Length: 217
Image (cartoon, rainbow, N blue to C red):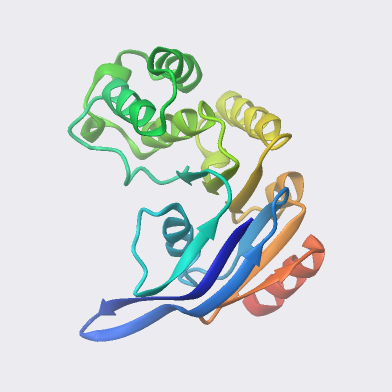
């Protein structure tokens, strides 16, 4: 379970305060793969980062009774001056998992070749996503936060990513941001629609998608 209590987050934009998350309270149940839906700029990635603990809210808090990954599609938690393998080793120590096992898993899965030993600053966005996705999937979290990552790479890598993610979802929950309703339907079984700083939970995924598409029209 993830419980969001009175959460508010704002940013300074051209000298004005823009509220992205507005006194939000919401309980997300365990055992669900949730689609986080909303128009561009609604605050989906911001909310994921706050849930992960990589971004501070202005006020409010997030409570959880399980382990939560960082937002898989985002590499902001990784250090640009460390190599891929050094970043993976650092993550392994932070989360208390076997370092060599995680390095071996990521090296095999991400298929970065010699770049695995190069600084992250030399990576393309796709390479960073391969690294972060592989690292996250190599650790057994209770809830995975996923931001568009299954769309990364060529057809073979996409298929490999989707198969691994589906396998992990057999024993974990997820909160997924994805603009493909096909992938949302493939991986998710419930939904949350974020609009004007507020969020509504739907047990029925199709109801969430219907509201999301109505807001876009």
